[in-house]
Length: 395
Image 1 (spheres, rainbow, N blue to C red):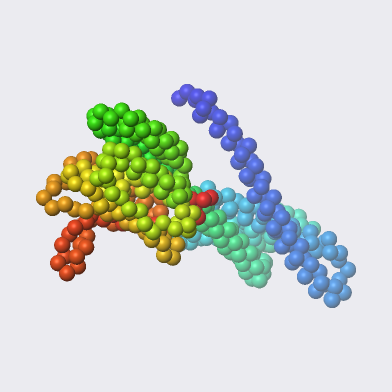
Image 2 (image 1 turned 180 degrees about the horizontal axis):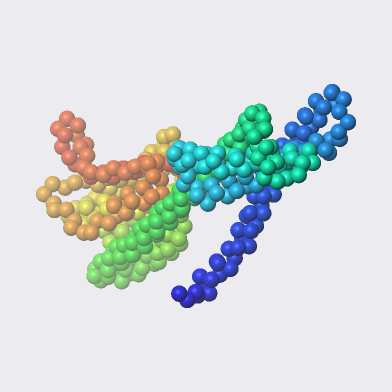
């Protein structure tokens, strides 16, 4: 099989990387075991001083270090094995089998190593016979001690590898959660941008529709005034739609200008009252072009459906840093509803959900103004939202 440069590159860097990993592990093991031997030999040397020994601490330390030399190699290889075959740590059976394999393979080798050290210290020639005799005369305490060291080292390496695996899983899970959150945020921003993209043409279309009605009325002066107002409205709409937040003061000023444009079209038939606006509400924040679709919806289902006058109301209320906006229009008996697209309310609901989540709500439907007869006379849209932008949106 031909190896392309793209696939050959990792192979070329693999040996140095593995060599560095092996060197790092060996260095850490040497430091750990040297520290353990230093502490153990220090205690041993203290006991020997009380007994009047003439040996130096360097001799005692070297004896400890040499007797644990094979243990350093064992712990390093054991660590590398569990890093390579990490699945052995996922089940108790895998750990038990690894432990039995250690007892079968390493413990006899460690006892042989200790025996060779003893023979070397006693200046006994090393041959098969002396090795065999030394193995036979190893004390039970020596065997138990090496068994304890081997088992303790095995448990320590298991604990370190298991902790590292758990930490890696936690980091991978955290990274996965962060990726999901980023993806969700990107999707929400795309949905919000899509809603904005729909809102602007929808608003422009309705404003142009109002201007076209003025042109058909063959009143050039009024039509020209309408075009000037439309220019101001579009300037605000295009500027505000590129921002995430505007003040209620700007938004309310915008809807007043929008109503003035519509008043050129409907004349004295258009009657809209805006109440409850105070200085504190004006300093609050809201998504741009949020309120205009509510008035547009009221106009579409009121004045566009009959020849009479309107009675559209927009009421603001503030309680516990929550703004309530209620827009209502009369329901005229015997008048068919406007068959338009009706994008305003669904888009407004979607924008509230995206921006505020559960902190905002929207309700719409007919309401009874006469509680005794339960007669339905008005259609009402109610929005509840925080006075100021969420803290997450300001970061």
